[in-house]
Length: 570
Ligand code: FES
Image (tube, rainbow, N blue to C red; front, side):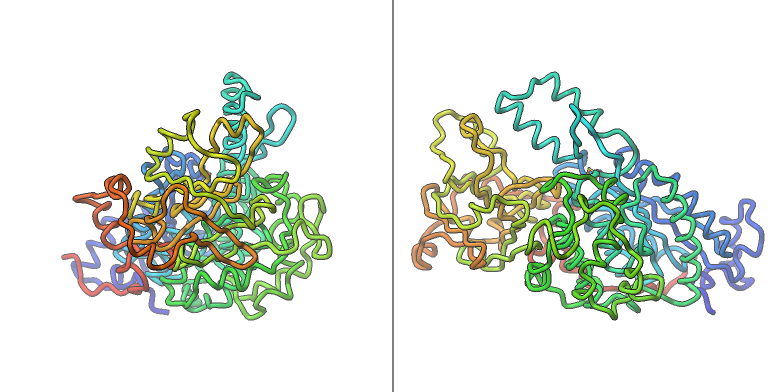
């Protein structure tokens, strides 16, 4: 076996001397002679609290790599903390993917173990690994332990949206709201609801990039350390077998990921991430595939934000494999996992230990889950909605538009007592797509007007070209494409227009003719609020980002460059 790293370390010339000598620092000579060099791409950071424990996990991965005869090399990579990073972590997902890809390619590594957790970290790592195409396997950092507040489960994110609305409605005191903070976040790990982090870990396992059975193991559970050690060993074998992402990930792998996404009631954010990962692999995946494959899959998991339980409960109840066993006939039997065996081979022994958390196929939480793709004259390239998180009565709705030209406009006016709005209004927020904000933030689940909250209204139809947190819920139409800043018709709607949402018919329309729409000019208030960066990453991003319906990757990052590096550094 010719190792990639031998291009740096093999031989006795001056350059091989340079590469070995600086790396030696106590490492024995055989470290550089035929032993696989395994990078551990580590997204640990104090500023990414959900991933802060990953350096501890990396230690177990290192043990495994050493046991299998490899040499571990920890590689800190760009880390994105969902709660801190402004204007939105999504603006930096492609940058994290690009920098990780380039550092894997530029360095003497033969394979990589990817350590991620918080929302954007597993997607960016997988995008990078797909584009550099060296053997790669994910160890997901795992969710936090369950939160509890006033005797009830308190889920990360979901609890924030719920409790903050209670404060605004006057049913929870500010003191109790503050007290809930440390009840919500009580251990290491990522959000414990079925938010984007949990979704992406489970979906990455269904895709085949995590050793089956690991995703969802709580961050503080000793079984995660054991899994990390075994995965470290596996990474060395992957190099020996040459199992790179392009050798085993297929359209069937994405099919399985979409089935899993629907059965777990996963985050809408998985759509843009899976589309972007597929784009790096050259696999034809479209936003239609999510509706076609996923929307008749039963919802089997009763987790917040739509349901009751949390990730620790799901793990205890049998985890992803127990869920997938129920829908085994819907999976692609050929799709392989990182171990070289098909995903379906792992399902026969997977039991449900708590039917309150994981339902059997015969009595699902909901019959048809998944994500619905809407089209119409408001979203020519599509928009999505997660019916499981919506109010059933609102899935068919006609109401007058209440338009906000920017997030600032929204904040300024939403609590104005004179705002003309009622429970049937359709709130529209624009300028929040990939180019407009920039970065497509999670602002689509607009808080409801206080005066309606006080009347007991808890959901309304909302439409936006941005995203929604995976921990959020409501009748929210997301990812409208093209976005307003790319000339989409969402930018032409005016307050008072009639909007028709027809989820069963998969339509989203404004009751205006093509001529009426074409005759309208975008408002100056809206265009004036679009991002107009003049330099740096934001400029590159706005100039090159694609729309949500294709994964919001940069146009020049789609596809792969492989692992070849032509020239020496000296
Ligand atoms: Fe990191 Fe939710 S904030 S996973």
